Image (cartoon, rainbow, N blue to C red):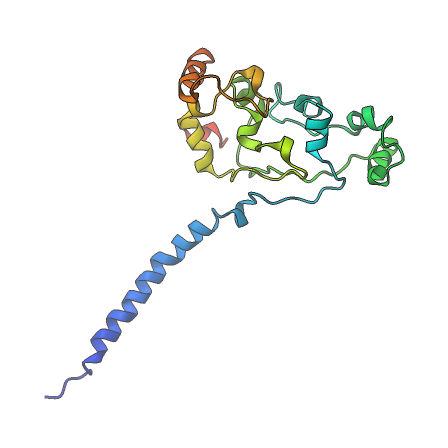
Length: 216
């Protein structure tokens, strides 16, 4: 009796099932990988700002401390963006007629805040408190990178949940003396693991890895 289907139909069936299985597993896998790429996280992207602000000049050349502009970093969940009046403390004396600072002067005299573009922008469902991290010895450079070397600030880290959890699980790899949190060039005087364990005990650092620690 002649077979109902030709012999090659078995191979075709296996091929079709294989493609369907690969697609079913491969598509979500590709999406999971895709959302973790810098293209999606924004890591490394330089955002256009309303006024060109060169951190290299202000930090390295002029020696302005991080906390002069970001004054809330030790006492608030937010580091804060400097008010126009802070900028004008200097620019009422220097570059007073620069066209680059026209918007700054307009903001000062009209009282309308400058709409800076936020660089490190966490999702709304994520709770992050700057003050506790700074108090426990997490340096600015750990999250924000070498801002003092950036002509235009960009997001230095991925800000993925896994990145946060890595630090919470192994804080000794990142801790430094709280007095050095704003020092971009600080290097540990002894091996980081040794110093980190000492600081973790002294500063009572016990980061949570529970969901409600960051999602409230």
